[in-house]
Length: 407
Ligand SMILES: *Cc1c(COP(=O)(O)O)cnc(C)c1O
Ligand SMILES: [Zn+2]
Image 1: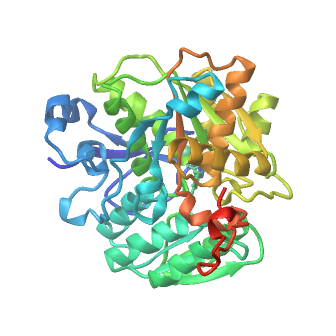
Image 2: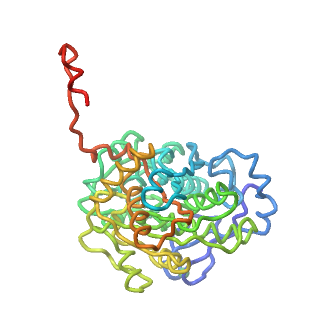
Image 3: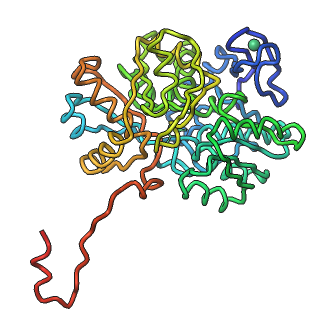
């Protein structure tokens, strides 16, 4: 069997839903649905030995992914990203064991590819005729690419000041692109109000059950890359929280399948000081995070003022003994260049937020020098070149003294 998916279960009220038809949120209470699998059976097929012979893409974990028919897997080669030591940068901040999971090499340049590969595959498999999503940028480009690959029309709604490259990507992929005078939640309102009438399937973060299934593969990959051990801490740049929530789910599944033990990493959420709903709720001891008013940050993936999965994110932070903190846009910009120059890893601002967080948490003593810490470098710096200040000398090749100008 390709997939051991059995049903969907509400994360809040426990209501069961059929996985054989398109589903969005829980029909009883409106909260997030999780895909559930026959893990005992999956365990017999997805053994450590069996995995050794499979290609290093996220589809290697197909037993615990929802796609039923391998022919329905819509793929551009997502997943299978490197886990790289950041020895020079790590040493400089007192964390010599620092590792980066570099997601920038995914199709469309961010880890959104993982989630959209699964969401679009399942939408197609279950008969959706078109997909739609609000997005801060990267989700839109990933959805547009996978929808094109699947032959489905895509409708994209994003803030009007989303980085130019992400608007251009969606346009190139043939999506119907609309700019919204507002933020991702405002764009979400437009999708919600139009989806049913227009026959779009809404693939908003955590509002359908399969994007998190794609993102959870990051949890499987890091375990496998570390020889089926988990790190001491994971620092994750949190917007809608699909990645944190997905990895936390993956760890429980892996333990149930006997692939790992009970040890869990401290899950650490980093957000921008200009948009930090989860950090605020964590500090107040709340399980829900109200809309963060006046959200503003140059990291598009962190410009998410309200998250439907707030309780799932906050539960993971607390159960793991993790924490939540903010960093400023200026800190992200500076750290981008520090890490690019020290390590050859040119990352997006969201990723840079995790580097700043590692520095801060090492300085405060929350993270110890002998700990193995993974920072999630969720997107490629190449999408944000406009943020690098350039003041480059221009040389005259006919100037006999041109060499004097080179320092
Ligand atoms: C979307 C995005 C995030 C936030 O991811 P969530 O899993 O939704 O919290 C972080 N970084 C980048 C580059 C993103 O595109
Ligand atoms: Zn429910």
